[in-house]
Picture 1 (cartoon, rainbow, N blue to C red):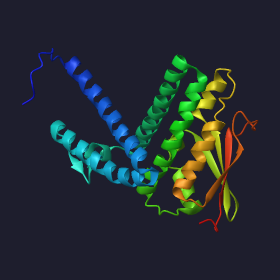
Picture 2 (cartoon, rainbow, N blue to C red):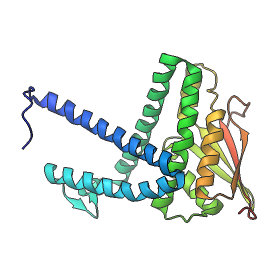
Picture 3 (cartoon, rainbow, N blue to C red):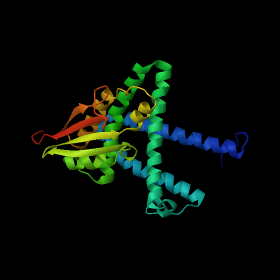
Picture 4 (cartoon, rainbow, N blue to C red):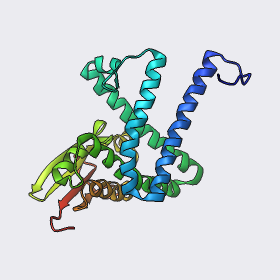
Length: 249
């Protein structure tokens, strides 16, 4: 039995506590991954988290489903499976938008307390870790091999969190290369509506895109065609060329 702490057990207080416990669990999960990556390196940590993540979801979903009386089917909450595809797509977009909001809140938290330089420094370092992690999780979900090639990279780019809330395109420019363009970007579009200058995201992009591509295939090289503060045409915000070097490794 749980210990009686003597606190007032109103529905509001209990609900707030449950959400706080969720938050603590999220941070603990992230800290475990960060420490395993620090101690064992990216490749080993990605291999471990792809296994751990499935087990974590099973533990969470099955326990909550039992308490709330939610039926499970093939390891997924049955009510989710009963939703129309259109609703699931809206929910997927909402999850991605929440991720973007979380990213922005962290950036502003550092910026308002310590200035833009420290915020950008933290942001770029965060992308150095998140980008290959996201690639590793997408590799798992799509069943891509260690050398996914350009076709694997194309598929992965269309399954990123960004892909569900921005507008992007892929153009083959040769047998060993293609160009990826970001036509609509939530962050930049919002700044444009407010009459602000482009956010200079190239320093983050120079970490984000090469790390994402190389995680999927170490032979792929990334070239920045243009990204703010670079000048760019109206039809896209940033553009990146991915080249497969067959003789590499």
